[in-house]
Image 1 (spheres, rainbow, N blue to C red):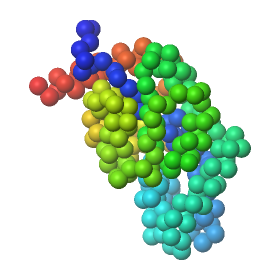
Image 2: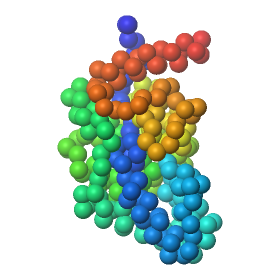
Image 3: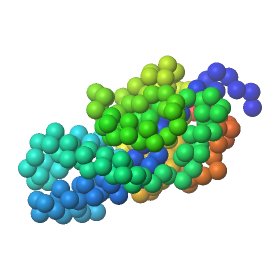
Length: 232
């Protein structure tokens, strides 16, 4: 395949929680502790709604459930608890994620982290990786609109100085997929806790294990060409 500028991958945009790291146990512990303190059940419906949600939206939801704290107080407690876990080394990396990041770095393809976690938590996570792994970070407390709005991914591309339609975004949640897909990025879903069948994505991958920069650039070219053809 002859790749034109529009089908040449310029950057990869990564979600963090559930895509780069399996931080769900840390968040679930912090959220459960708060709900239990006020006699509120962590039902399956509540759990599903929280996955992939922006932190401000999640905190507002906790207030709707009856947590008698301000959004700022809820966020502060969550960040402190999850941050403690990250500092203590309680990080589970998603299969193949670090290896793919290393391959992309060797190939000279820049990456940005696009997360709805707060910047302090994003910085703690990125600090566990080799210097320069991520050329930019877009965090939940730095955006005007949280996912599923496209704003976070548009900011990620802008931070790298590339066009969004030359980016590939990797996500694990329906909320994140809607954000990335709406931004115009080629969007790949890698399921973790939730089934992604039927969600807006250009392709679903079972795992990142065995995926390298060559595979990513090749699939990007094919998927971008398919999107362009569908618009003709």
